[in-house]
Length: 181
Length: 192
Image (cartoon, rainbow over all chains, first blue to last red; front, side, top):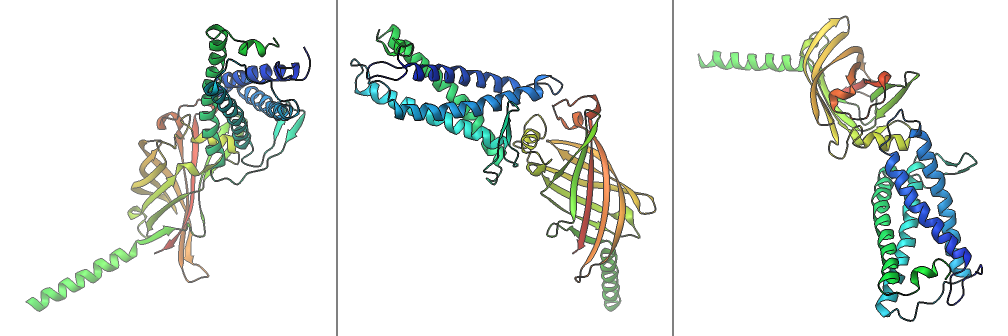
């Protein structure tokens, strides 16, 4: 398998980033859902949010990399058996996933930095606060983060189901392409 | 006869007016914000955490000669809670604590004032917080009164009371040292 995407196949870089983001998105959702219900005396009460924020910020960097890589090495063309509606739906769906994920991550960042505090990434370096003056920033960003989090995992689930539909019902290469076939 | 009655009425009215003027009405100085509703709660038993409610308003009537006739009313916007930490404030507004979405206002209305000594009094009243109304007693201290340098007349008090979080249906358990919060009200009123 080559690094770059070709006109018919995904390359290693796109495939690795896709699955890394997939694991991170579902993992962060589960971690976020679990951590907000933790008991104050749980050993994870401080650690879990720190992890959630650190992984989330690294995911932001990976997503920037993905967008950059799409531009440097465009994804392969649609499969010939995909009709106009399928192509349009997949384009819109993928755009929504990208956009939703970016807004979700930015909202998360705006919660934690609303009072000017930076976010330490695994205690290694700090991402400073920038926007701090949106009215009720932590609450507004919090609502966006919560609802968009749900929307995104549901939408990502539909994305996965669509891939399975291509594999088992249409019996085309859509899913297998993401494994390098 | 009629004349006498009129005189009596006028006199009575004047006296009543004088009586009302004795217990002066004050508006909490919101404009200049010489008023604070703060709270203090133990963190793990190791330190005190202080917080404040930035947005509230109210009034009181007070007569130093007759403290038992005093009255206090305060309405507070629970969304305005501030502990100098955005994530914590967001958590405090959630249904783990103040549930501000459902209960955006807290109120205190005095029902009885009992003098407990020189310049001190117990103010009993109904506190509504997180949708729960319970009688509380605020131990209040008169700080001072007099003319201000700008043509007004002011009087100020400080008072505090202990609240059990559970009493006001606050769900989050912060541990054995943090079952109670001290509410500290420090207000200056400008005579109306």
